[in-house]
Length: 119
Image: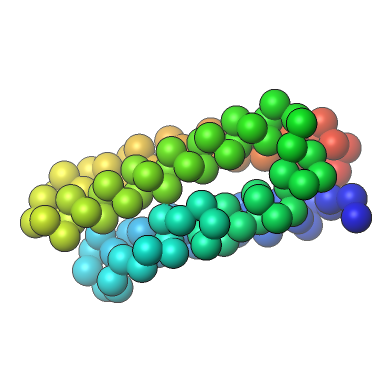
């Protein structure tokens, strides 16, 4: 089944959800769940591996998107670990890195959406 602009919008929502959950962890609202940082269990990672890669894995944007999502998840996990170890301000400052990854992911999604003619 071909991807639609709705599929890409769902990916964007999943990205916002990740950032929101991570922020909640770094501000003590919720506990860090391992699934949040797992490329297999994270909603954005799941979408990437079950929807996007099977259909369009040959596109360079998809490979770059996968790398960027994995970097973002690793960085998020590192920030959560820093928070748990008491380095609270350092962890919260790291949210800027997460925003940079999110910006890169958005550029890749837009590029891929245009390449596939769904945007």
